[in-house]
Amino acid sequence: MRVECETKDVVLENDSGKKVSSIKVICGRCDHSEVSFGRGEASVRRCLALFRENCPQNEQNYYKVEE
Image 1 (cartoon, rainbow, N blue to C red):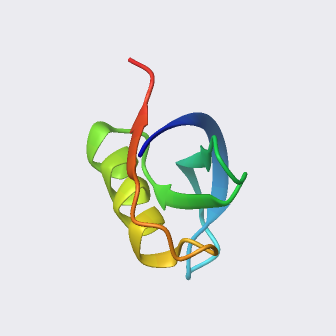
Image 2: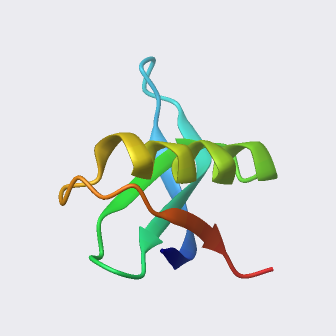
């Protein structure tokens, strides 16, 4: 199933306490979210890949974000 996801810009704190511009991606099906440091395409792809690994409903969907 294709699942449309939403992105939000957030600020996360890294291990050394520095604030880092980051991305949060929210599943359009169950509202589960994943975060990654950075706001680039690679950070978004990482979040989408984590959905497949960490889905709370154990689903193997195809996740995408709006362009």
